[in-house]
Length: 322
Image 1: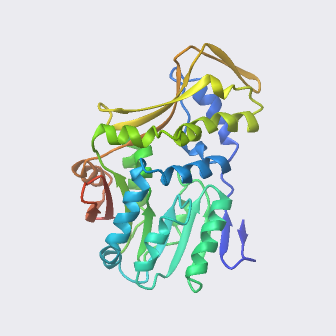
Image 2: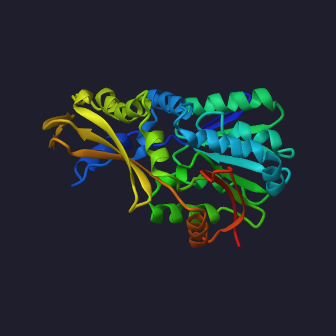
């Protein structure tokens, strides 16, 4: 469904929000209960995540934006002029606002997000700064379909996948997803991707266990979403936020841990939780530079250039087809 009675074009591919219920039931039926991280981002969850990005302990967003700003002219030179920018998981305006000012006469900008309100906000704010830029918002779940990329063949198509979201995929899923993106590129296309790098475990722990408790509220909010949308009777006070770094898997794992033995009703379903049992809500994989270069090659992509901060906590990579 396309709406054009706006200063920008909005294409609503009507992502299947009903999958929330299906994913919750399927996730709770697993031996080790788990939920897809994409369901964090209802209106409250998105607001809490924006608050997380401003925490002093949460270096991820701040460091990525510093890299985009500090190396903006170099990144723009590598991308080239008249680029068609497609931002996957655009979320707020903050990330793309660090890229657009440096680009040489970008031809168009397409934010892609599952939240239509976030899309509208981003599109409006971009047009405030760049009133002559062609802007098309795509409301879609990019983990389910990339069909919206088919119409952007050639002409310096630049896919921006910022915010270290690639770390939320399992390693084999990340390779498959990057390979899918590679299949949408012609010789003049590229992917600009943000990647969280491996670092001291204490830094990682503090980033996902902030003393203000905002990350905990973000994690627990998914239970409140179940109560609102699935007529559940979950006592969120019976769960606690639990995040830790797994050296073996090279990732932060976020869980919701049951603080007591309890039964949870979700519409016609009832699930038993033992004391200490967890719901695995998110992974955030961390890479060494060499590991990410290897992942790109596995996905039929080459690292054309990359930029990092002086501590090498975060990397922004420009990927192209061989």
